[in-house]
Image (cartoon, rainbow, N blue to C red):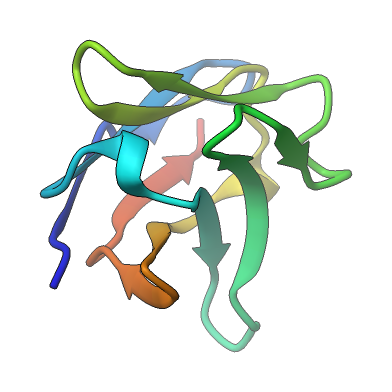
Length: 115
């Protein structure tokens, strides 16, 4: 069983920045894949960005050039730096990991982009 603690969401004006953090209860070196997803009411959950144990990353087209996923090995966290936020980025953001072949999800952190 893996617990995920997410933080960093909040209310920000368009054009602003936020950094989301996800801290798993196991060492990130033992995790195959980590990622951030988001969901809005009435829509399916979508991948925002992912990172593998080797450090390879993938970003959704909507995130490219604005969002960056990274790992902070010293703090055992995965970060999502979000810049130039738009109102359409408003969503509940979830951290997810694949550990020993099992998917685990956090409870989500709300990001609201509004003036």
